[in-house]
Length: 246
Ligand code: ADP
Ligand code: MG
Image 1 (cartoon, helix red, strand yellow):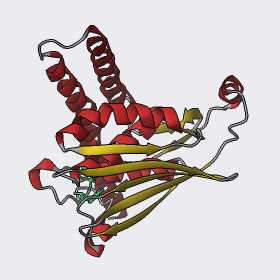
Image 2: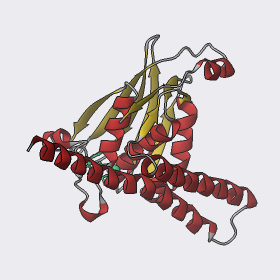
Image 3: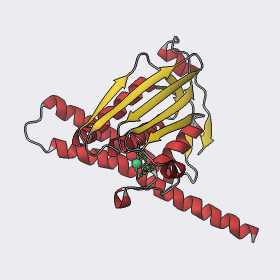
């Protein structure tokens, strides 16, 4: 009986992972399709065309990597050894979501005083940023402001995402991060936050949420900081390989 229970549990986990995979593949493909649509417009500048093509290439590669990472191994691995310049990662994710923000009349404001460096998995961290900011934009269907702020002290760094959107009830907050929990009907998967929580947890980070219905929501990610005084190259060389399972 015990054996059977274990087996059922494992099957559930596999099913859950399968759904998460398709979500992680759909995001980059949707982004690529969006930029292909932009490319189809007449009179776009050469500069924009080059930029859109490079984004499309990056997103398709990302989808390909997700497939490789998740389907060739039974357990997804997360790298903890990559050095992430949070400033750059945020700018890339914001650039990717800018067309979605524009469609919803959402203004994205960034308050980056200095750069922040953390250790983690670049691709998975990018996924977190996209999932969290996409939710924020979707919470403001008739416009609003998404503020992204970096905070740091000698030991910790925080990334804050504040939206002026719909907010969440305490019941919604309780279910946040549960697989398949979505208030978006067929337009939602309810997997975005599950992915965010598991990746941030794997990177030894914490997530703090504050929300008020009709006012908005703030997500605060906190990680252990790396010294920013080191030379970029030095930091990259310093990293050793370490993996954990998520
Ligand atoms: P999906 O976006 O597909 O619904 P997610 O896992 O990304 O699934 O989010 C789960 C739910 O959490 C959403 O359906 C929504 O109810 C709530 N949520 C997440 N982020 C926000 C936000 N910034 N403002 C309001 N609600 C949010
Ligand atoms: Mg979502």
